[in-house]
Each structure stands twice: as C-alpha cells, then as structure tokens.
Image (cartoon, rainbow, N blue to C red; front, side, top):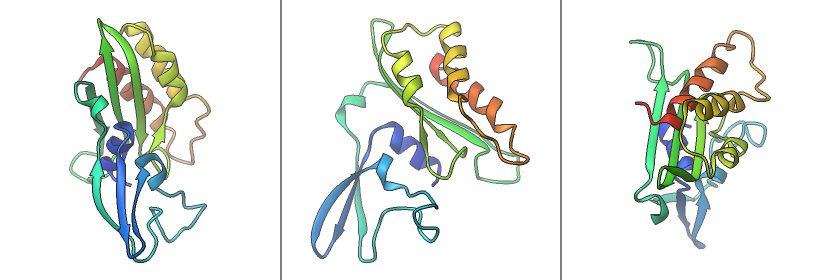
Length: 164
C-alpha cells in the first residue's frame, strides 16, 4: 500500500466498494490485506468489485494532520518509513489521536497503544519521545532493515510535536 493508504487509515476513511450485488463500506484499516492471507492481492477487493469512493469522517475536519516520510534521495518514490497522524485538540490537550506507520509492515500499522497513551496529554518533548519509543515496542527488524526502528521513532516523535 502506498503513502495514501497510511493517511487514509489515520483519517479513519471508509472505502466504498460496489459490485453487481450492491454497495458496501469497508474501513481503510480493514481494506489492505496481509500477504499471509493471499499473496496475490493487496486489498480485500474480490473479482468484480470496484472502489467507487473514499469517505472521510467529519470528526477530523479541524484536526491537526501530519504526514511525513523518509525515502532514499533521488532513487525511489517508496518510503523507507512514514507516519500519518491525526490529532483532535482541545485547549492544548490531545483529545483523540490516530497514528499510523507506513513502510514498516506489509499494510499500514496503526499504533493503538501510542494513541491511548496520548489521550488527555499536552504536547511536550517528553511525551513525544515516549510516543516514539512506544512506536518501536515489539519491532522485529528483518536482515538489513534495522534502520527503520530509529526512523519510525523519530517520525512519531515529530508527528506528536507537530514538526514538519
């Protein structure tokens, strides 16, 4: 999945799919498929399905949104690591957060534990560092991609602080 997939999951998008039997909505978080389910597909679309719309919920209308990726310079369009985050703020406090990492797994990886930890907190450097460290909890790098862990930690830290 592309950079857009990471952003769509962060924004809790609904993917509207139509086929001869009718129309259905699928949460973006459930739309992208792990290769362990079916190595030949990247989405849950079946033959005859057509993605006809993407709907974004209104609750993110006034949110702070952050997207950032790190890529090799002048060589690839693909991210080495990316983060998309949406923050609903109230009087300087994070009321709701959705943080999703891209290019660290086969599908966008939502950071549920980080989101829970951020709720009710003010944006501070200490909070951002804690969120970055939590983002890498349980990470199991493959051969030659250990560099993605500090990249992800730093991207999450920057997202929490709103640094672009």
